[in-house]
Image 1 (cartoon, rainbow, N blue to C red):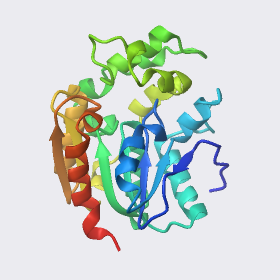
Image 2: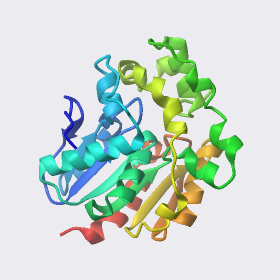
Image 3: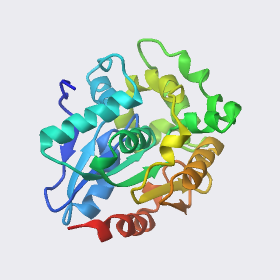
Image 4: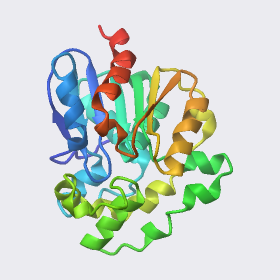
Length: 266
């Protein structure tokens, strides 16, 4: 795959030990993992990745076509080859979780462990016959134009559970970065429409950690719980809160993540 990797696609926090690659969400990109990088950077080679969709949107540009979750996974494999990294601990949140899962499916030989925080894999619900829950928000996300207004961005953050409905997203710490990357949500419906095969999940044999909140959206709860039953070596951890439960409970999240990756370090 010959693909130009744009500026802002990745950020290397350190170069100590085994590689840990953390893929960000649709609005935060690699910055959404800054807190975790601080915990890991003294012992691991930590690389934060902004999906191509986010990296291009931050520059006011559409991603390369035809964009898809698989396209993002292929781009990461290409980037790893460029970095000289043969195998890594792969993790992702939300959109980043969907990319991380696709990467593990198509590049298992490059995936040492897999960590997913509420991955946006609506196709799992559709394959299980839960079409209504899988596609509930798809219609709302198909009406975006060339620009995204403050109101549209606010509504999106409420819809995906990133900001509690009673709070104004414009007052949150995440707003500034979300505004910079706002054009990425024009592709939210394509994330929802992504296809997949449950049998591929059952073939994953790397140690896997699944994280979700105890008060997350029903779809996120159902996706994460379904993955816990489908992926053979998966362990699920439930934290207090919603879609950002890992941010709100960093110590408990890190305790679970260290248990996943430390036994497999060199």
